[in-house]
Image (cartoon, rainbow, N blue to C red):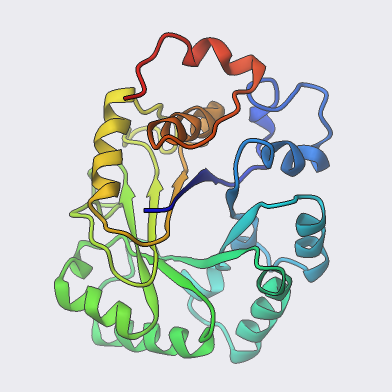
Length: 263
């Protein structure tokens, strides 16, 4: 199993002084990030369509970093996009595919998106409009939890996102299933009162590692979305250690990793 571990986003001001050096210019964040990770989720694309120039700049300024791109909310939340919108989004990220720096488009649907006939028809439309590129889908309604839905996703060219998150109505958590060409895992944290503000313990990470290994031998991408206070960075580096991947530790974080067991 080839495993890649990174964070959901990188451009967090609160990571300054925790992960990023205090005086580092914000435009250099991605360069610094790429010294420690080989993959990243771009989440700014959820709020505004990325420009082709921005994508090219990210490519030029990082040597080996690969990118997963979160789909704009018009494709997942308002669901009122036009075919021209799909073409525009694909055009903007095209340089990633040309340079072999692309992982997938992440379609993250809200809990209000339930399994109905019109929902499945919408996913078929989405698959057609984004055909030819790797697509992963995160659904949060428990109405989608069924083997026939996972088969449907594979037929439509989607891979399923497996999540670790608070066990409440806003997330679909487990059982984890491998569906599609790649394994894709997102770890949101477990505190329902403080979304994304959670530090996984080493024991929790070891159990998550076991679940990941059970997904099977496909390219596997693991992204930490517990981004508050830089906790995603701490846990992502820990997970890399647990999988025996090469790890560099930022000097400011060295004390955290000292005297811990990684087997």
